[in-house]
Image 1 (spheres, rainbow, N blue to C red):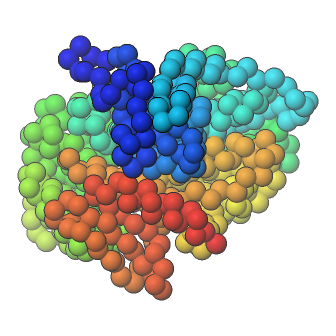
Image 2 (spheres, rainbow, N blue to C red):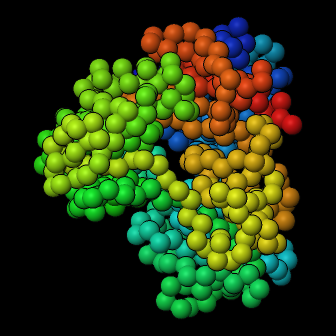
Image 3 (cartoon, one colour):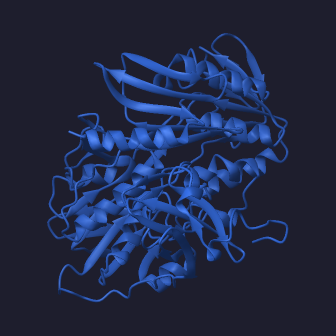
Length: 507
């Protein structure tokens, strides 16, 4: 606890009764530490009250069985052990022992945090696992393999110069100057050393040899594998106009990209963002936080209309305009001549900094070279296995049979990639676990978070509950009378309940 922050609620070591609970929860303290009491069925649990991801308030979360889900970004924790059972959280939470004497509930000592299990061999094979990709899916897979007790070799190949990072932060708080760079790493360098994960940065893979069960690196070295995870992610779509290759024109995908934009923002007075995508508008918001004049050019009638619909699109535009962003919609940039951008409409924008956010495309070259079945992404089964046994795919490149939308889909969401990495890892170990998680993502614009659960590539209508302009709403995207997705602003618990309903409705 900080010196100026007092412990919350009643002293749980002195005891409380169930009458003090609200909606099955009670926030109190033991000594100087805040503790959340949670009633789950006939049991009472005591757990650390802040999510280990971005410190979301679990007191406002959803209890499902003996777990609790964070209202902000849908991480999930075991109430019994504190273990993070679903991304985006990775670290466990502290739990306390609880005793009951008739009506009185007393929280006693904190349990010792479980020490990472030391992997031990249970079988001679498989021994060598290779993961291609250093993003969300690749990292989650490596971490899960060790958590599940795999003791063999794990080699993680990344063509990035940075260790796996919290990529959503690159366009949000880090770019806005509200988060230091040392917050970005998912794990420090010592984690990979201690876990025995051979993380190789700045490493290109030239080919996957399915018959010989090996990968060929860019330097010609060959690396054998028993199981392989392909998690090469996506890359930004490049702008194909004259002048797009100038040094002041950036895309945003990596830590290096974000660093370069921050450096350029230090001397820029005006920025041009090309594309009104989620990432484009998050960049716009972050640059406004740095007091830079921002212009957004996009061919769309409204920002994000295809995903969120016209009403939410109008709200997003108005929100950005309230914060000083200038929109040039139903227009495109035809050429960049130095700092001068010429629009199709004939307009001209002078900008010292240009950021292109016109979408991403999956990195499929290795999959195609290896002969994996593909359909606008790498085709995988419900177990995330590709058309070649022993080779799995996860994250932005994977197209999988989604039981909720009843379609084969591919999405580019951070949380989905992490969850797929975990499932793929367990299936590499022979667990045969279906990937059935409901897709989820969040987007932050100034002080307004938009949470989206489900997947609707198209919809017939949108049922709106509450007020979008009042920043208190829940939108249901329906097709054929069926709710395929739900978006919300400050309706976090309702969003969690929608996710649970979709999980229970699957198939």
